[in-house]
Length: 248
Image 1: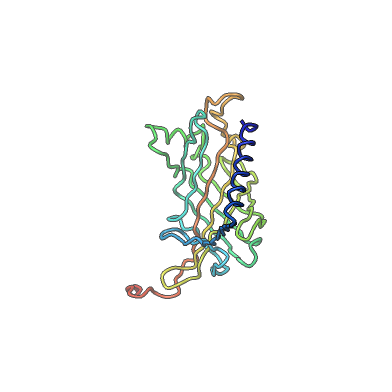
Image 2 (image 1 turned 135 degrees about the horizontal axis):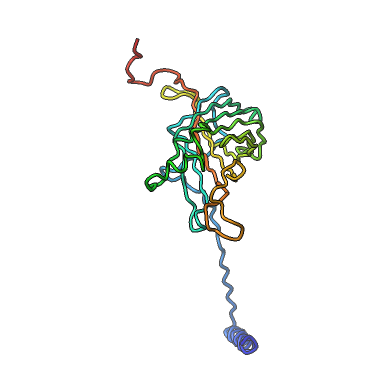
């Protein structure tokens, strides 16, 4: 096909040149393509992510449980990622934006607060029982940071001692600082972080139901953990306008 088209294209070009020469005029048309640089306009309702402009001060912050989640996912027969979470979380952070390597975090999860999507009857008790979390014997899950290594302007790897099911092992979180603000009339200073990591539950003495090699028949060993947190210094600068005077 290509061999056939080449002579036709060449003949067409020669014919065009001949017609142009006979007319005695040569017209040249130049089309200029203008490239317009566009800047994306923020959409209403979308977060404006500029954590580097945060004015949240250094200090001690408490985890805000109303705006914090710990969600984990693991394979179910290879068909889906079964998703669950914990609803009772506490924590304290020593925050220093000028020296992020000195930031320290202590957090505690109540494993009995395990939250499941439409669990069958008795399933919650099974997972909090002896074969899995054994919450009667191990009533807390804890994380205590030991090191912060910056990986970008607002990202870091946070390593710490993680205790689950009575076993303590080092765990590293990939953390993103989402920004913050200083205390104001309505709220104390507030900062937000996102984090993720992957754990093997068998490393913590919870290997029940892990599929044998070469099969998906069971519940996966790897736990993909996603964490969203907000932390608050606790005190507004003054009562909000229109707020009732403090009692007492």
